[in-house]
Image 1 (cartoon, rainbow, N blue to C red):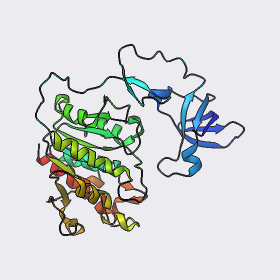
Image 2 (spheres, helix red, strand yellow; image 1 turned 180 degrees about the vertical axis):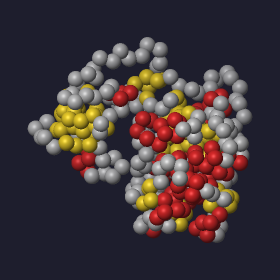
Image 3 (cartoon, rainbow, N blue to C red; image 1 turned 60 degrees about the vertical axis):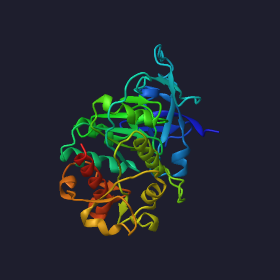
Amino acid sequence: MLKLRRASVVSVNPLEIALEGSEQARRAWTDESLTGPCEVGDEVIVNVEALDLGLGSGGFDIVHVNLTRGLAAGGSEDDHVMKLNYTSLQHPVGTIERPAESARLPAVPVLAIGLHGHLAPAAWAAAENGAGEIGYIQTGGGALPGSFSCDVGELLERGFLAGHVTAGPAFGGGEEAITLIGAVDAAASLGWKGVIAGPGPGILGSATAYGHGGMAALDVVHAGLSLGSTVLLSPRLSSGDPRPRHQGLSHHSRAVLDLALGPVELPMPEQFIDLVSEGVEGVVPVPVDLEGYAASGLPRRTMGRDLTEDEPFFAGPLAAGTRLASLI
């Protein structure tokens, strides 16, 4: 059963709630596109599971419904495709997939990222190298609400992204797609010159070979290959991650390369080319501008480490974004 509790809103910015019978403030988050806004004093129902478990990336109570002002939505009369279908949060959306009778446009290059922390450096590097209109497709594997990512909002505002599509189980982006491949297929019709696709923040992980959100990148790879795109994989690299499986070229990236059913380029920052073991196919050495990205004002921390403490982590997506720009 869902671990739901009654609570009241005690602060809006940041959003905090107090559970019924308690005065202790707890961090909370709400997707206003589903629940509407919250105001101090509102009675809400929250899902407390993640915060009670002490999860890092999911350490919030999530507002399930606002009982005070969230029960008057009129719904849609035109859209009939449901996101989060057959859950209590199902809601209709309009979608961007190409009509069955229309002709396909030429495929654009596709960059697969295995975690959300690669989006900002990849998009910045692509823009800095003249890529033009690059869009982001958010997949499953991490946070599903499109509004949860602060990075996406900033990248859109600063012109580093041309658009944001939430595909498959993800929802709430600027545009919606029922399937990942439908979103990739529609990229050219949106005016995009290239695609960066991968999960939202907070990917799942279980220290197993394939039981992690990074496998969303494999779905991106296969969608791109099936449509005739040139496909790149942003390498997850690290010199500072204490977990051996993520040091050097992470097992997340190696799993995608091992399972890919077609050719995949692996752009590698020139100064960290030695982090790739012999026998890895598709390696393309690429120069990167770590200093430029560090001064960009975009996120430069990952899992508690600053860019200066783990340069390879940021250099990987910088190489990928730079290579993506060269293909446009």
